[in-house]
Length: 445
Image (tube, rainbow, N blue to C red; front, top):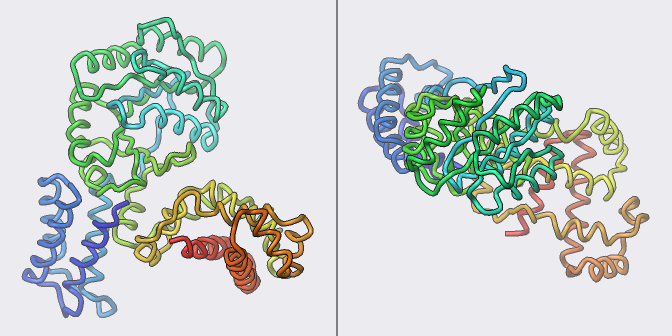
């Protein structure tokens, strides 16, 4: 996410490095590169020009403190303007209404159905809502079944009328059911098309008029760049939606949609999708995204994800075990499972300041821990609890049982010992734990 843009901006801002002060000449040179970087990232031309003009006006004439270099001051100005460009502050979901109704809209293929389930799961777990999903896509084959499977996996019921072809009436009936059964949130998944057409717009507009939703959210595939922004504008002109959802931000996206869409449609980005798992959803924080774009990491989001998986009591128990050098393979396996729930490993590592660039070319996928888990699961309970008893004959058996080579088992055992020593010294640093375990994946290039 934003890797190319981050690199280009970093190079552009280095033009000021070594300069004694900010002048119109060196700022112009820097911002010429910044504008090119934004355009290459598929940012709307007018947005890129306005952005660089604003930065230029704020930068010229700034007094540089003796403790700062001009490049550091420019980074701060660019960071502040990137934050403003993407909305300034995080935007919350409006829960007014009994029940509150969220209407999902967007083109087919944008990830709308999956994100409806992600949002239901997120609001159920984090906001203590009782959601009901509604299947109003009556055209796409298996759309209702897809939503039901997703709903079942997160234990959220799905209202559907498979024999009906009237999405407006289905939505109204679903709201009645929600009121009767005590659901305080209704999320309506609507039909999409491969392209915008009049029938699609009329249908979604009719549903909106009938149910009067608390929120109308537009779901867009961020990998489509400027096309995403243009589509958002057309939807907004017809629906006047209240917020944007950007999906597939974990993919090879250049970032143009995230940086342009807020300015073009003047509606906030509310959530982003960061992976295929139903837990891969984050509230959009413009300042944190600006941090990531400028290579500063995103420690706050990383800590929040960790806190969701690591309870205070578990952390205290683990800290005591680490301090006594009693951290074993059972603990290690449990930590791996919790880290996997936090999201994509490479994405997590990129949140650590200074790490993003070093993991850019690493081939770390969601299966990166598979061989480690297989090796640990091939150990006996006694071996997992007492790592020091694992000798060569035991390693040979573990290698055969896990389908790995002896060399791979030796590598894991050696790196586990290094992690255990590090943890004893740190005595409880959850982030150090994660960084160490992630680093062992570098052998998986």
